[in-house]
Image (tube, rainbow, N blue to C red; front, side, top):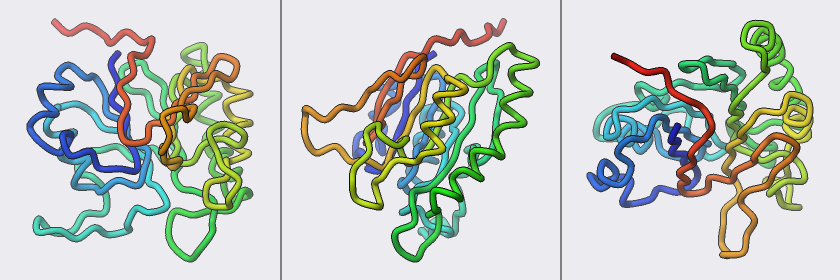
Length: 214
């Protein structure tokens, strides 16, 4: 399965007809936060493929544009505090960053633990029905100790590190950490989980076979 993941920065050629030529055949679009709703909506419509997203700390409650008001990208699925089965791909997500100023989609470490705990019934149901807990985790912030930074806004989330250590999804996509140097580490393996910083955009081929249609 080919996945196009996006976060934090609008890439001009993705917001143009070029996206159809470059990413024709992508099976899934993932939004990891801090992107305009109209931008995500454009990409999902241009590629005619499902979009799953979480919000970042810079996302707006209401986005205003010449096309009217949006509170989310139309047609996308918000994964915050949800588990979701997309054609056999088991997904879950948590939005936001650590709270460092007044504003939406910011939480304490304790809040993040609460968000993660809301996922547990769905994860255990996945294990019972499908024999595994989770395939893909989507968050805005990174887990503590992986791709994070020392300053409060960019510190990693303790609950996310625990979640991937215990439930071992195959892939974990996050944003929030901007990449300014070519030697910045953007992929890290923890156990069975490949943790991917998707700043800007990343195309990833994940190990999941889409069901055939006839």
